[in-house]
Length: 112
Length: 113
Image (cartoon, rainbow over all chains, first blue to last red):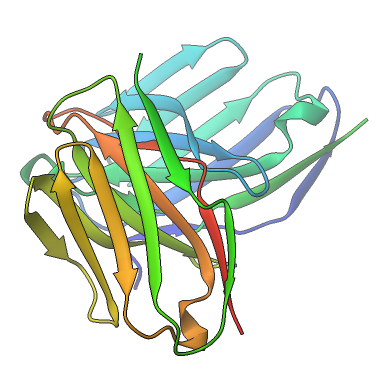
């Protein structure tokens, strides 16, 4: 079993839709959770960072962590064609913050 | 502000040839440095990471090696490339604090023929 599971997609939605991207994980020690956005042929860029359980909002993006279910989500409101990219979740544990464990990424396509 | 550079952007190499990819970071001191490989549909695979000059940790056994000759320079090398070395190579840095995140370079797309 992989430490982090993420549906590869692709996920195709119309412009303006609410998008939900998810990751599940198996290591209960994970406490730091990140979402990266990666455009085609580019390096990943940090989108959201959360610590422990709860929600964090930044503009149209909301990151949610449910540690009891070992489940994290990224919601995108009012999705735009420019949101079309691959979204990777990543996480680390306090005893090993030098290393991030990544999901395989979900490819999102937002069509006009 | 901090910036990270990688070169070359793309590379096509024959099997058995050597490899040298370079990564440099500006605007910070003593960063943690990382080399990842990203293959299609397989996510990011951590290859090497370094917490200081001359300190390299290898994550997977392979025909690649890494060196950190200067504080903000990280080099990925191979003496003889294999077909399976093809992929998108990403360098990343972090401050190495307990709650820090990693920031990625633009990547090098390597094709081994």
